[in-house]
Image (cartoon, rainbow, N blue to C red; front, top):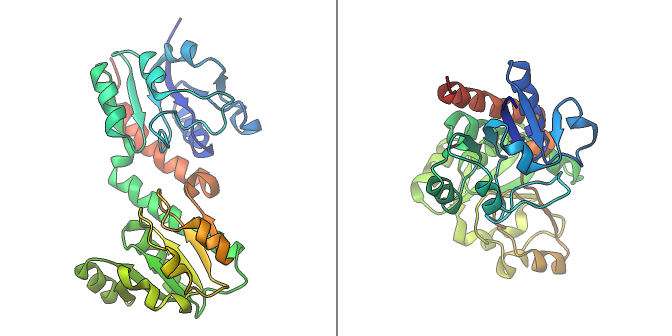
Length: 291
């Protein structure tokens, strides 16, 4: 049987958009893990048996992130759970695996099986676009869950990496009063040069009561009882980090509104984020195509 060129395994709806784009570029594309995605995946060949379809692919594309726990593949629209180890056992050294946010453990498994692999999320352009889409989506979530305008609101952003910086720039357009909480002095100075307030992240509790919106981008719990007890009761807390920055139990007990908002580009902007991802994957396929 002739091999199918590209197989997408799991992920959110952005993977479907990505697959559709590659199909329009003339590649032979199929998907697995979308039996619960409804009509969105109807135009693609959607296989029900991973072991069978794996043998048909030259390139195997895993989602962003490929896994949330390093044990099971990220398959939110699939009826079954697939262990990462079982997945690796069913591919061979003639195939190439493309994935987002790979782990050391996963990459070691691939290398031990002599499987060529690439983490497409290491592409700088894609990470920048993903940060922009996350920031835009975060504001949409905030607008839908608050009765306040951003205009003249007091907003706290913890962290000033890519997402934090995009968020701050967007909020400035709305004339929000933006404060950035970080640790390093040089980052504080950079934020101030961009017209923002900047404070030490360890001293958030001192000004906690004044904020109307809080966006966390730091993968570490910062908002414990000592901080949350000082928060305005009407504040909207939005956690964008991979690991929660909030003590959610305490926030709930106090009565604060906390929204955990991860994977926003794939949920709210799947077309744009899928297209951005497809551009990187198409380049990697072109650079590594057999024959």
